[in-house]
Image (tube, rainbow, N blue to C red):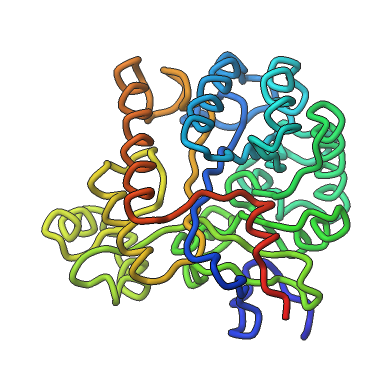
Length: 334
């Protein structure tokens, strides 16, 4: 099999097979990153870490449900003593897992020109993408005293060399692919036609792609992969189709997705036999005022209520939690 990139359409033979009894599981991933103004151009210094103490509450919250959260950490977090203080013990005890998230604009060395194109790390020269990853990987390993098990490119910005870097550093899982989304209009990757089931990126089966889960719901959901991209210039039409129950795209996230929507998405994922449901959110949503999704303490209460309802519903549907280690341990290699 020729060398494949993360964005290449996987073959049927490359689909991951899980051991009997694995069933369907779910994981909770956190893009653990600095706070910055999402409305302004990116820069290297205008960010904060005020929400970091809130990681302790979310960790405790997950532990109460027997869930192992996966913190995908970028450079400002990796070098934050308070973050390490909060997460080192859960990581050491197996109550949390850590991965790498590369925001190139705040990850040294700073050799590239700032701009939207270079905010996707996969667009950088291969040597620079590798060096930024290497320094971040080392900072996480040293400060959190744990080996990263996964990777998510900031802004989902994988490129033609990303898989080579992950294989070199022995990271077994990439979770950058956001199936059914296309970021190519702004210089990013196109994941529109990629599946929801995990697949092996390399022939040796040492690097797995674990895509984020996004479902289509509605009477036209079977046509969603074809129809939805053709409406990208018509957001009002997309909204109208969602309101009348014809077609809706539902990512598994509390950020901008209502409870009734995500429960529909979970049902569809179960019906379609998705083996691992991948949930995600950005860590600044753990405190009011840092993302568009949590502006007040009332919003934060609703955020936690969202997770409570989701965790209870998953338990009701017999979908068990797992982590990246659990995913790898359950792979059927034969």
